[in-house]
Length: 416
Image 1 (cartoon, one colour):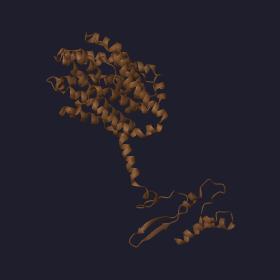
Image 2 (tube, helix red, strand yellow):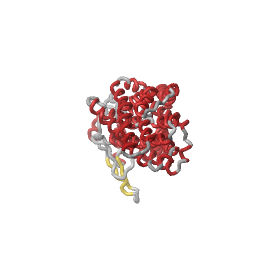
Image 3 (cartoon, one colour):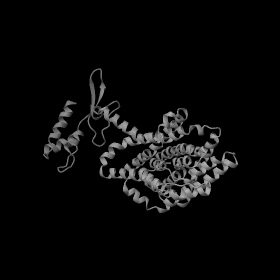
Image 4 (cartoon, one colour):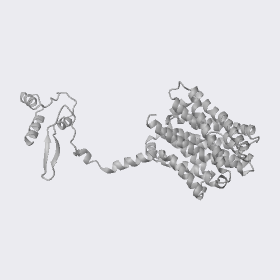
């Protein structure tokens, strides 16, 4: 082995073009390095290092073989390369922690379910999260979307007016029709109080939920700006549409605070998304530093937003007819998710991203701003039973929506 290594080292030293060096290279089968080659001397020298594997640890002997220049070097079984042996374990652990943080969104349905059970078993765990925290919480979710988007994404979203119009139709035509149908069913077929039917209809009259934007972002990130535009449009026009629909369906005139609605849009949607976009554009290093922390924080905020309304209204939900209301609300949202998914498939068949668009419109149609309906029920209706369907809707809409996130995200990962 020492003779062979000495010979190879000598050949490497005679890297000129002398006749002796040429004959020696031909004799031992050493490749010729061109005079003007870009191959570095270190790479060339590495190809001459023999591959050694431990033969017997007891006797301290080793088995060496010369390098094969036609095939890549592959270590024998049980051999560990020096590069791998000197790699510290700390960076690997750090990378794994970062990956866990980034992938924490996959646990969202489980966390939402756990928060639901905890709110039912021990309501004080969520009752502290009152209405004054909802705007900052939803604003944080929109900030997370803005950090992971660019202004170009929103400009592209405005170039799809047909899709925006389809989302608006699903929000203010399909959903109110479903609300009227299930509201009347609750009264005529199941003999529930009229206030319960009014609560179901009220849920169908409000604008889209900001949680639909976050659900779309988790499933199809490129479609999140389009979803945000849809929800913002429905929220802006809710000032006029929600009172009109409530008057048609419930025969109840709801005075909606226009100034308060505009202020809500600015606080929850416009300001946090703009801040995220500007941060991503001018301070990308800050975005790269905080991105791993956003998913787990978003999961935590979403869990609070789901558990709090349930804990605050647990007495009404656990009433004698709470199970029947629960089934009606599930059927109501399930129908909206299904219709929102399949109808765009007929109208946007030629779209290159038709599947992603179907999922986006399904979230937009199936998820309502039930918190707004809950606030309207508590403020403008004397009967407390009107607030029960919006409270249940807040929980079930989130559970169903983020369960679809888990299913569709897995389907995309497997290529289905």
